[in-house]
Amino acid sequence: MSSRGAEGMRIASIIPTRDRAHMVGDALASLLAQTRQPDTIIVIDDGSVDHTAEVLAGFGDKLTALTLPGLGPSAARNAGLAHATDDCVHFLDSDDVMLPGALAALELALTDDAAADYAWGMLHMEILPGGAMQHANWPTEPAHIFQVDALLFRRGQLLDLGGFDERLRYGEDLDLYARVNAAGWQGAKVPHVVARNRRHAGNMTTDKPGALRGMFDAARLAARRAQGIKA
Image 1 (cartoon, rainbow, N blue to C red):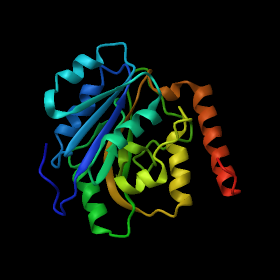
Image 2 (image 1 turned 90 degrees about the horizontal axis):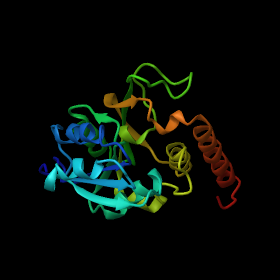
Image 3 (image 1 turned 120 degrees about the vertical axis):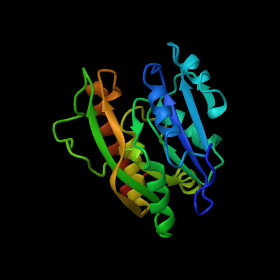
Image 4 (image 1 turned 45 degrees about the horizontal axis):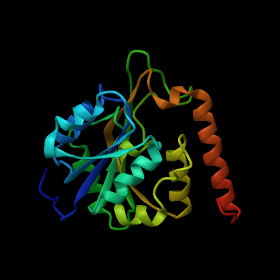
């Protein structure tokens, strides 16, 4: 992996995956092509039944592979977060890719702003064959969208916040956003695209009932917290 960044910061990139043997290699290649590579790459294979394990093995010691029995993306991300020992963590969905220079830009934004709790780059939606936007109001142009591909967190703070809510299989990003805002966290924005969110027929959010239920559950939990009720 790379040497440390200019400020001595170490970064772990964490990829949860399940049955994405045909796409996870692209995600990993985009990390390895960074001008500032992550110091650690952790991939959590969450119950794959395709040949994901063989694809990961092909990357040798460039990554650490963990396995879970299909507990969902929140549990997989938390497993990677618990395993990491680096200063900061970045999460990348296994069907998405980082743009060249993305980690360097996120690191610079975070180190330049000592008051920032996380760095936040712009996300671009790429529609692949069979894919569609998540919903009609989703931005078609690059935008600052709170999705983990475009974020860099200070690991200790994210652990203190509780990581991702493992009760949620959908809407976990929205729930995290609500908790980050409630905690008063400040984001240092990177003014350009750092990642491509690839929309395809196999996206979890193509399960419309599940996605809507996740949004409802995240909103319900946020409302309970705002009322001082244990979520």
